[in-house]
Image (tube, rainbow, N blue to C red; front, side, top):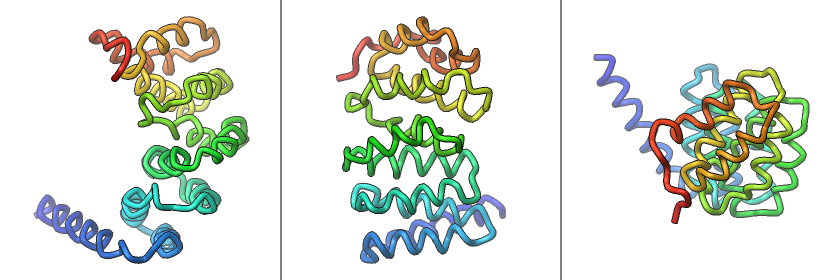
Length: 198
């Protein structure tokens, strides 16, 4: 029964999200805020899915509201969804927001630094490599597990695009933690990756 109930809930959530297409950017953000305030984590997942569906349609002015979601009820799974699928897509569509990511990458809130590190996660050849490596280097000595893991993940994902650049960065980064190093090289060491992604 549990699997059937889970499937039913997932289908209902997907149908509800699709029914909100006409709400527009302000409506989507208001719905996400309302969902975020609900006690169950499942509501946050629905909010992330709703915003991810419309990430490229959000205005630059949405960034502060998205960052407020990051800092409210923070946990890795919702923070990562906001970082890669929503904030990352917003910043890719509105590159002037990169300066906000620069600011966050050195800030005091480690969840916001995680967002900065991960926001280019799926950009592939559009990744600003200098910026990615700068964020990783600036946070390399941080003892926080979620920062170390984010660094490794961001580098591992970029290795699919340019494995040699990631190998070089890892080799030259003395402060990089063993966890970040291991995560960054995980797929490269298991099997060779193409030197450059098309």
